[in-house]
Image (cartoon, rainbow, N blue to C red):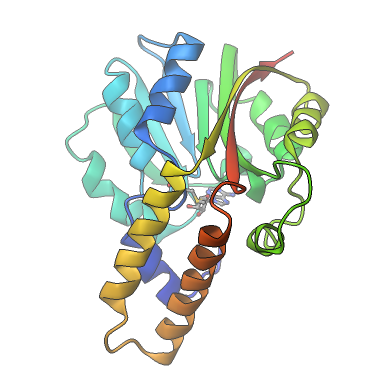
Length: 238
Ligand SMILES: C[S@@+](CC[C@H](N)C(=O)[O-])C[C@H]1O[C@@H](n2cnc3c(N)ncnc32)[C@H](O)[C@@H]1O
């Protein structure tokens, strides 16, 4: 992935690269009844926030965080250094081999496409294996312009019903879903705002451009915090 170094500087400093909380991970593990010596992949792990939560919650499991951006993997290595059951590595989540009992993927499957991603992951699942992923959704009705502008970089985005259809098209059954709205986004954009403020003094023109773009994204979210959501989907192959 070819990202400007200024973008990497900002986003590598963040605890995570998209909205989500440890509670979401724990909810998914509880709903799926997962424990014991599992093989787990955190696909598109960024700097590894969820890899850490998964490794702590599943002490007998092996957790492999995978991301395509070297700067994120480097930034995340230190976070898992004291966790014997977690490792982060550079790789393409579109070419997972597994076998994994759980493929967790927060805010990343849209890079592959939901249906395409789930299809690609099927062969990487162990028998009985499951996928948990979060994906942006329109909540339906008359979407305010801010919502449409916010999601413009993800033109394939659909509503909750459309997401169900994409999952079904990939040959998966949905086990449960949870809407991530409000607090996880507030926490995420709060952290982005803090890092923008830290990097703003003396920023180069290229850095200022990246900071401005991130500020715009946060401002759009703040215009419609009750209309912008991820859906966390728990699914298994039919
Ligand atoms: C919105 S971020 C979410 C990161 C992390 N899951 C989190 O919630 O903090 C999406 C991540 O997917 C990664 N990504 C995109 N395409 C990828 C691919 N083909 N293989 C591995 N990682 C990929 C990006 O580098 C980025 O770190």
